[in-house]
Length: 182
Image (cartoon, rainbow, N blue to C red):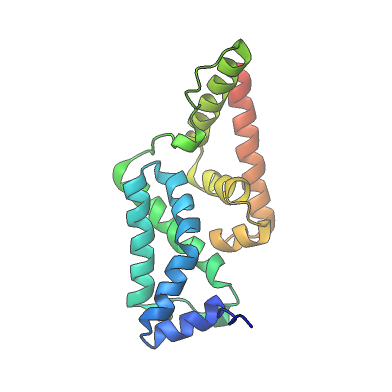
């Protein structure tokens, strides 16, 4: 019978007791997820790696910053930590570049529709980059990270209705800007 893996909260208790093995399990379990999130903000591999590393170091050095009594799951809470570090990084260096994942791929298109699609993707990426930070955060968490509205709202410390409003404004802004070009 396979040994059951401990849940994140149990691992965090052990991290609080200085258990490096429990910390390593958390890092392995969640690094990719938070790297993708940081990369969407920074569009720079090294910077995204540094942000995730800083978030995990912060957790290791002060594990009591996560309070299970607040009712948030570790993953929801840690999204907030990483998002805050991304926003801080963005403030330090100015506006982020367009992430490769949003840029059109150089596939040597053989039809006008592929060229137009690539141009539209590049334009959309540029307009997402220009969104106000809270709208961009809501969009990334809900559409790219595919989080439930309740979880995204918890990460952003807003109500679900406020999150929906941010998403609505972001989509309306994007629609309006895209219509100008198309």
